[in-house]
Image (cartoon, rainbow, N blue to C red):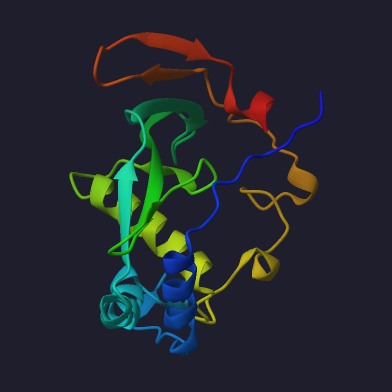
Length: 197
């Protein structure tokens, strides 16, 4: 069966508004510093500052809404501490989906393709806000073709997560994940991450 995506046509008022915003865009400053990777980057606030007045001038609104209920994935991994003793580390990851809506005074638009999904490690109550900010920053940057000079996938090393070339992993294989849907508390086991890459 041939896959034929159906895209909702963009109303003329939204096309015009996007075009006018793009016409006035220049490269966005990089006000934040990633100390781990040793590079500067444009934050969500930088993107908002560059866009908000221009969008208001043309009467364009962009909404970022959760699309479905978030899930929490628990990942356990066997390893050894500095003394060689076996340990199990446990991390919680948030899986969340967002959909985007564009609106002018006369029209509203969304589409199944206007979505972003991401995983983010749960490190505290700010995790949900960080996920939404990142998803919205990514989508707005793509929508308006905003130049930031940020690092992209072409600039990343091609080695695997643990520095082993070719994506080969040795030892420390993760155990099966447990997925919990916060609303109903149901759980199910998934195969180890390594088998799903």
